[in-house]
Image (cartoon, rainbow, N blue to C red; front, side, top):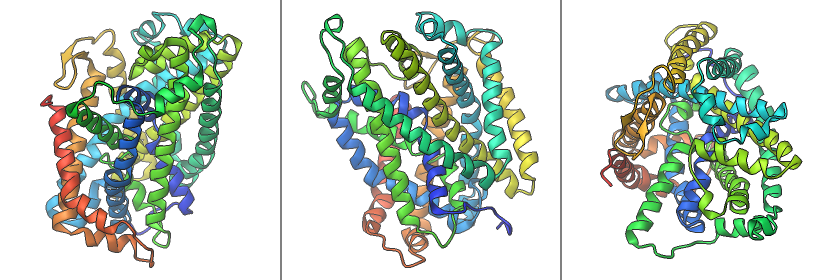
Length: 461
């Protein structure tokens, strides 16, 4: 146990940092698409239900493990039970693999934000702009370097002066920007040129359940889709919440803080849909929804271009908002790795520099994967060929994260027993209203759902 381990100065500091990690690119470019594809309100209803059960269970487990052991993800599991020390290795490798390609994407976001700021939003909306940019030899690398350095500076400054200070500034700004864009999106009116579609029409398309033509199998696919999105959205099974939990003070209310993270992340995910789906509905129609980079870097710039002057303003606001969301997440990824190195006896500053250099080398390789090192690789869970970025994403997100989460459920549910987590969560006399639900979820329901999710990664269904 680290004798002089840093800690967040308040519970709100912890909540904002943890929520900042959870609120990332997955909320913004994946949630709206999955909601539109999964029957709108049907997906929302299922997602919220899973957030209150499945998501809460995983989040509570990881934060409590961190606070109980006061160790990073690398060593925390070993302190829970020596036989499960291997989970710490998984928990550290996952953010190590994700950080480089996440910073590459963060560089893409920075490029678009800069393009709109200097008045080149119309150029960014052209058909070949995105492809031309990512296949360039130097520009993607330059933006990746700048983005990674911003991330490293925050972690280099430490838990309080870096992560907590950044979160207290960026998260309120991020939330205000999301609300502002959401309100504007609801007021859109396409006029006769766009068949008189309005933002409110798109909002209703988003929130009203649509089960037309859906069978039981289709609904089950929506359930698994919602669970997969939630799993990645709340930043569990990647070492982050264990690490942040280790900085959470013993005197603060753990149950209340986890509830706040859960609510914050769900609200932001919902608002991401309010931001994007009405705008896409008005200018591109319901068939215009797409997921992943295509939504953010192709569809949204085209929509802003069709808004005229207002589109330039909202393009700047939108990409700055996305940049803030991405930065809070990449900081947590780097911190999860650095914290483990610190627990092994290396200083924070040295650890940050070493990991940043390693991440930069891998990130450059990822960038070159779209030009000099380009090749196509068929992944089991996708019909489209993947490149280096997609392979790293598949291994970390689709294989290692479910395995880590299943291992965590076995550790807590059957080895240390759920009482270990419940006792940690109620050590100050707090009330844990969902403790019976938690016990059932961590022992039985969550491992089964995670195993099904893992099977999907291999293309079984």
